[in-house]
Structure formats: C-alpha cells, structure tokens
Image: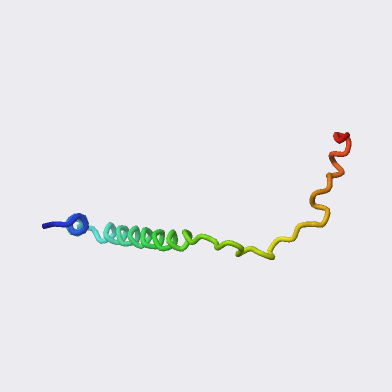
Length: 76
C-alpha cells in the first residue's frame, strides 16, 4: 500500500529525475533550502509569551490619569 507521504516523495523524485539541466537542479535545491528556512523560522515565531513576562518593563507617570492641558478649552 502506498501512503500519501510515500506517494508525494516518489512524485518529487520522479520529477527531479526529469530535470536534465544542472542550473535547474541548483535552483530547485535553493528553493528547498528557502522552504526549510521558512518552516523553521515560523516554528520559532509561534512561541507565545507567558503571563507577566513584561512586568517591570513599563512605568506609568504619576499624573497619567490627569486631564491633558491641550484639552482644557473643551472641558467644563
């Protein structure tokens, strides 16, 4: 029985053997390297931050909730 993975790998190998030019084979290898790099870089980006990991990174000013001077003319 042929599994889907085996089938697709066999298709890749059979189509690779049809390429007669070395530059095309090199281009294919470069593209495979690109795909592998993209796959591994995406795996690193999927990490989620843990709760509280930025604690202490931000400090609010003591007058943070005070009205801004720019809006005094609009306030009652």
